Length: 115
Image 1 (cartoon, rainbow, N blue to C red):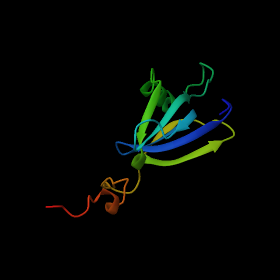
Image 2 (tube, helix red, strand yellow; image 1 turned 180 degrees about the horizontal axis):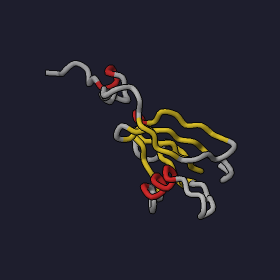
Image 3 (tube, rainbow, N blue to C red; image 1 turned 90 degrees about the vertical axis):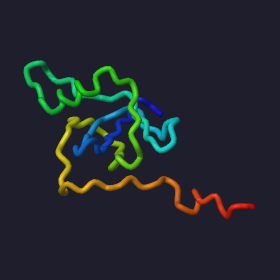
């Protein structure tokens, strides 16, 4: 995949929606996780500093690769231009969804017991 592709990844973490930009996105080597690599942050002048982007940049400082659980990913878009990475509060109340299994119940059923 050429390095000029940029992906916008939106995911939920601890009641907040994260929006980050990465050059590589794949299903990864861990089952049930999306792998994002080469996070891209805006290179702004030192005079104008976006506190939201600085916060997310410091949170991911030193991170080579992140593995996101499938149920936390909201969407992944391939975009033409990089935007501003940000963290926003998740709207919708205080109800947390219970994680759903990745396999349907019939695939997890071992079948009848043999005696």
